Image 1 (cartoon, rainbow, N blue to C red):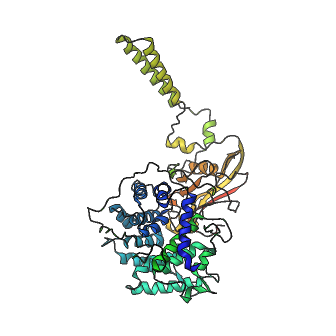
Image 2: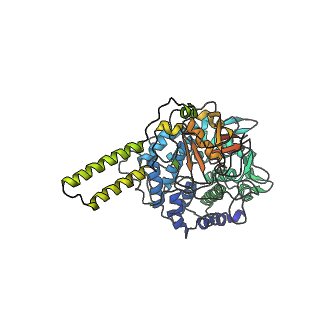
Image 3: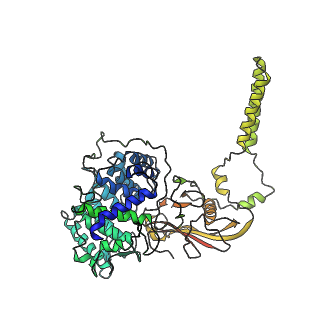
Amino acid sequence: MQADTADVAEQIITLRVKNDNADSLQHWLDTKAVSSAGNGIEWYVMALSHSNQYDFSKYAAALSEKMLNGKIKGAVAQQRCALTLISCGYTNSEVLRIALENSGKQGVMSYIYGLHLLNNFQNPPVSKEKIIDNILSSMIGDNTTGFGWAISGTVPDVDVTAMAVQALAPFYITNGSVKQSVDIALQFLSASQLENGDFKSMGIANPESGSQVLMALSGLGIDCRNDSRFIKNGNTVIDGIMRYSLSNGEFCHIYGKEANQNSSMQAFCAFVAEGLRDKNINFYSFAKNNLYDLTPNDTTLPSGNNSSSQQIPPSTSQNDVPSSENSLVNSNINESTETKDEQQEFLESSEPDNTNNSNKNDNPNRKSKTPWQLWFAIAVLSIVAVCIAILYITKRATAKNIISVIIIAFVLILISLFIKIESSEQYYSNTQVGKIKGTVTLEIVCDEIAEFTKYPDGCIMNACEIEFSAGESVFDVTSRAVRKNGLLIEKNGGSNSVYISGIEGIYEFDYGELSGWVYLVNGESPNVGCASYEAKDGDKIVWAYTTGKEIS
């Protein structure tokens, strides 16, 4: 398998194009990639950009529009998208602004991606040395665990360590401190490799960790096939990744389980990175040695204060509805459905409303408000009367004209009956259910990343009791709970394929490629989407943010 990494990579992308019903890779970039802009497909685009064979203009326009309109949430996600735009050949002052404002906002990951960004600019106004120092000072570990990097805690993680090495690789030769730290990190990665060649992250063996290690080694110019540090029991890093290859060319996340899109995508990036290192591999073999060296061969990016920099073009896409990219940790997505609706915010942020809504509605002394539809009908009828009067005054009061005015008025009043307008207070206080079937408890936590958030105790919403009616799902009770507590939550999809992408400004992929929201019911992670799992009386539901390790 080692000699055929180019073929494996080609098979991955070819199968992806086929599964998305595209006629060609260019057609896929102009359709599926455009509709998925900002939803994690960026890694494919970054890797494909090294071929210099494709037109990314439609995709770049769609992604830049989302970035400039604030639709890409989270510091790391914004940095990732900015990198992708650079790979497409587009940049403007906003890209540098992202590097300036987001570096360090989400811990070591935002320093790592911030450095990747700055490595693709000439004379950036932000000091690379300062960011490098911040990354080096974030190194953790001891003589027992080894030394490397992690999102949190005191034990280094394979994925984060490999990602840090990828960012530091361009400085390995010229910066003594970087060389010393990277050499120590390589010792940790070597010691972490298993006998079959693969790696564990957060205690779970998976191909994504091996892919990140391969990208790190390739960026340093290390051939994992011939470096004894990364050969265990005759197995190389590539052998470890290939253990997860399925018969159809896709990759699984857990050995022997079903295909996973993110696993396949990261394997693709890793094999492209290996192709950039090994010029004997006939796959995207250009002048670049690093997957994150994204500046197009024929493009010079501006220094940041150059007002004549190439501006990101306006979107030419007529379809701005992103589709699903399977996240490794989002068990709340229906994996049988690939298409997701455009990421949308369906709950607005506001102050919590702890008032008991049922008491409000049952209070006989509480004054009821006149429905706005009644006032609207009165206004319409008043206008009708005025119009008819004007018709008589102008001697145009024919039966046809009068009937036309009345019909228009009737239609307007009828339409108003189907329009629901609520104030913020009404929206958040509307947590009633139909005939109550039972009660569940629900809480929202982010323990793993608490130190990087505004929730130092890791608790976003304390456990609260939520009533539900027959047929309601975990998603239904979650929607009601966040309304009651005035929280912001974002979802994708519809019907039974709802996918929770962000809660209170914390989004998937913000803290690594395996990070995102999962839900547990009575301590177990269901294998169906949150909109498909029917609530049962007494269920204990927990939404938790994970960086990839199992949640208990």
